[in-house]
Image (tube, rainbow, N blue to C red; front, side, top):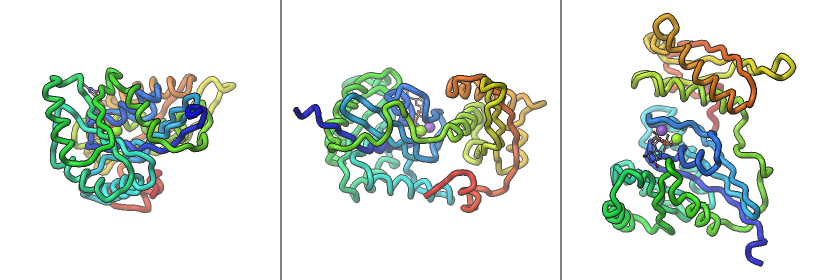
Length: 299
Ligand code: GDP
Ligand code: K
Ligand code: MG
């Protein structure tokens, strides 16, 4: 009887940069919908992943990292993250088992204390530490906040993630099926395409570039009887020097970005992709809110 009632709800994933939020989301959804990298602040907008089972639907929100804002984009990210926490049914606070407690967590826990939403502690990357250390870490976090559940996982290896999903389900209210069963994200394909391009730039360039890039879609259209998708996109950087880095020697960097992005976009769209990339300098774009809106950042 209980099981026949449909349960659904919104679950926010928060945590310091690089703890594995996007990896977890992609793992449970079974598809690459959130880009991943070893650089912080990879995820800017909230990315929703939808997991539909026979009698439940979980809508995951991969929130931008909560941290002390340094510029307007940082402010924007914080606001999105905090508003999200109040609106959802459950919060997953993810930590990296390898790193342990730090100032970044203190900042997040202070914010958790101001909301009513139930919170799980998800201890990720348990593949990296000894069980004794894991137990100590859990004891330490228990003191800091009344977490409803504490669940150790490895998002990379898929350890204990099924159990986590079951636990999430048990906290969800009865509710409607918000999205069709075959829909895994509410982001338009166009957005994911620009994110995949941004991900390749983050992967291939050094420290000075990542925090100051955006990718804007110029065009995306099917041609040749629908078999090929033509994508034109522009990578926005802040300085001429960064433009040089992104283009590379005789265009080698941009070529590699394009090659890797094209492979991922082809997998996403299931068709052949012709990708054309441009690089443009737009000084101080992070501090210009009107321009941020042009680039898809919304409150
Ligand atoms: P986010 O910033 O929290 O979204 O973190 P990402 O999902 O982008 O992951 C950051 C890095 O941690 C990537 O290099 C992942 O491959 C790695 N990672 C994520 N989960 C695990 C895990 O369970 N074990 C290990 N060893 N690495 C992980
Ligand atoms: K990251
Ligand atoms: Mg992420």
